[in-house]
Amino acid sequence: MRRCRKIAIIDDDENLLEDLAVFLQQSGFTVHTYSRGDDALAAIKEKPDRFAALAADRVMHDLGGLELMRKIRECFISWPVPVIIMTGCNCSKKEIITAMNQGAYFCITKPFAPSDLAVLLNSAIMRSEHLQVRKNENAGILGTCDLGCFTIKNFSEAWDFSSTIAALCADPEAAVIAASELLINAIEHGNLGLSYEDKTRLLLGDQYEKAIYRLLNSKEHRQKSVRVTLRKLNGFVQLLIRDQGKGFDYHKYLDPDFFRNDHLHGRGIAMAAMHSTVAYHKEGSEVMIELPAKRHWV
Image 1 (cartoon, rainbow, N blue to C red):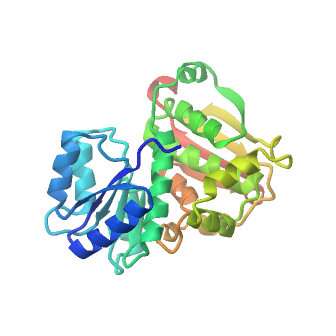
Image 2 (image 1 turned 60 degrees about the vertical axis):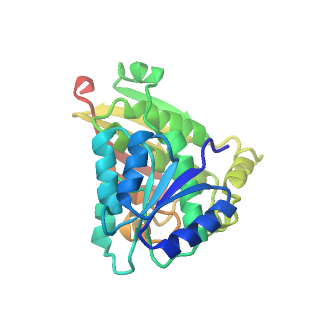
Image 3 (image 1 turned 135 degrees about the horizontal axis):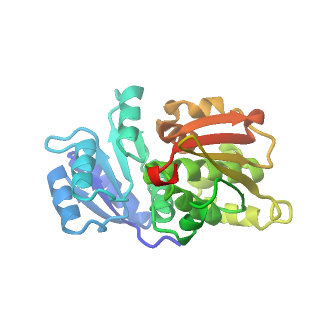
């Protein structure tokens, strides 16, 4: 269950703000709107955990979305709130990649359906709740070994494992994103056999979480697991992730073009590749990622 659905929408188009606020409130969000980026920044400085997610226009008269995000993180280095950047139709792929590299959760291109933004906000909040890097007692245990094998069966275990190994990496936030995205992909698409089209339909119908729970507990899938081999090698944390699926055509999902808003998901693999070295094998049922290790663990 989501703990917080309070969000902020920042845009200098008053009509768009009103339309989005009405729809998102009807969708169960508590919505705060700001027509000036400076006002949103002041509200967040006053209370950093005020919102569960933000959607901000990339270009505004005073403070655009990327600049707003940068100023917030200057004040709060580990600020974990996901930010969705709303862009104009002429936004290039390079600009989308730049926004993602600067920490944006997603870039959605105007004009868009309010329901698409609602799906993205739900996804961002769910991911943020689980992927905030936190201290984990198991990290100390992992830090004593050069090689380990692990079994991951569900999303909760994937998020916990990702947070644990992140403590071993030079960039914990990048590590938790890369590991969790690839583990979730291995579970939902590999072990559960959920297609891209299936996931799109479930997200639009707000049935995704219920469907995943049902599949994970079904007779067909309840015994399946993702095997992870962790290795320390030459200053890197290596993770070899193997699922029990038939593989898939992973090449197109490495293309950042999947960050465009005609794809409401499918960006996880490209996100992982932005934050680590990613190499798929065995037709997509096996993937190796490498992350720079912390100095004391090298």
